[in-house]
Image (tube, rainbow, N blue to C red; front, side, top):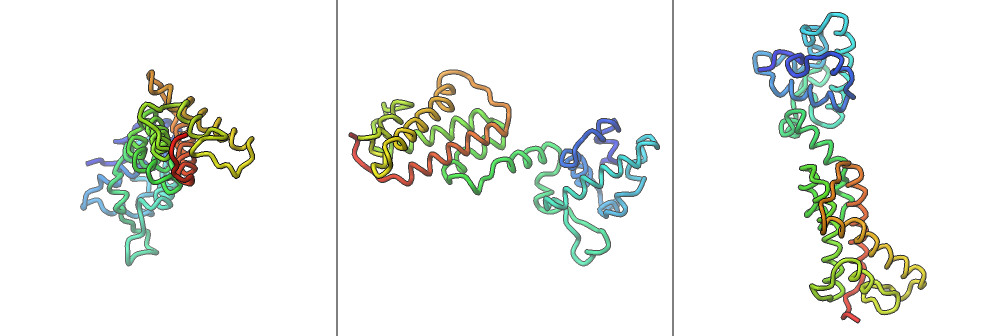
Length: 245
């Protein structure tokens, strides 16, 4: 059992340096360890009392309590805690099903990472094949898989052979005059631009990872790449099937 927040993060300066969405993981971890005998802490008023931070230096307690309540409000906004039915105006809360699943700081970090990638905006295939790797913070794997799906879709939609791969495949598929996936109703300059877009994306985001270890550590950068792959896959879906030239 965790007696108070101090058992989770003992350094007051480290606690106060955390943003509300970061400190929320500490609060959630604490609330998930509260036993039935101490369930009075599942109340916004009781939680905000000095007893919650009794192990910290007295001069830091007010600032710490304010920071903890900021985190509490963030948890409410995200639906990780909610007003207890029947006591809406009394401050009592319960930890929601999502909050129980997340449970602690590590779980909250994964949850926050998942929010970076707007799953509802992704092509269904990208969402299915990439989501798990992204949540595990395997960003290079997620990006590679996303553009691999683009390559597979282009090959299948254009009826190309398994040996047709990479940038050469993209240039054949979107050849401005003979490409099975090019749209001859578009101006030639736009057809050429789309050919360059597909070839450049595969060359930049997939091919390097096919031949060497490429480390992607920034989740935001990975999200941007995955969204590009999703957009390209939707373009492929919009094109009719043809025989290869």
